[in-house]
Amino acid sequence: MPKKKTAPPIELDELLAAEFNYIVQTATQANEDRARIASFYLIAVGSLVATILGTQFFDLQQFTPTAKLLFSGIFILLTLMGTSTIVQLARLRASWYESMLAMNQLKGFMIRQSPELASALRWTNDTLPDKYKTDSISYFQAREAAVLSGITFGTAVYFIEFALGVTGTAIWIWAFALAIIVAFTQMRIYKNILN
Image: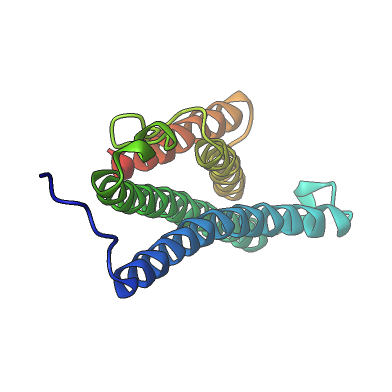
């Protein structure tokens, strides 16, 4: 006569429920933190640009070289903040992914206990979205931060060149080229952290 399966002791049920709740909270917290971090960076850059435009200094010739270098330093600081934002977004995506792996481990245990659950649970380790996924919200937030960082770095280069007396087309070419390099480099950093 086959042995009848016994239900796990209540303590195990409580432990599984507590683990499940913890995993849900860590995944939710990672998503909330991603939104906060991206918003903070966008607001920081936007506030600075609004402040600069609000000063109504549209004639850059009236700025001293020291003021131009100061502006450059501020934009370099924003670029570094953008890099930090990219790293944080990647780490939070990785944290979310780890939570999903933990959830799948818990689901695997529950399926082994009750095989009929297999058809009710969609994500497994084989069907889980990739950690580095180019159509995820995290990727889009990282791309926005990278583009803004590129722009802030290009602006920093512009002010440095302007302070050094570089004029003409060269000032724009260098600023634009370095802005693109920074944006692509930051997206490479994001990808490398997640791979």
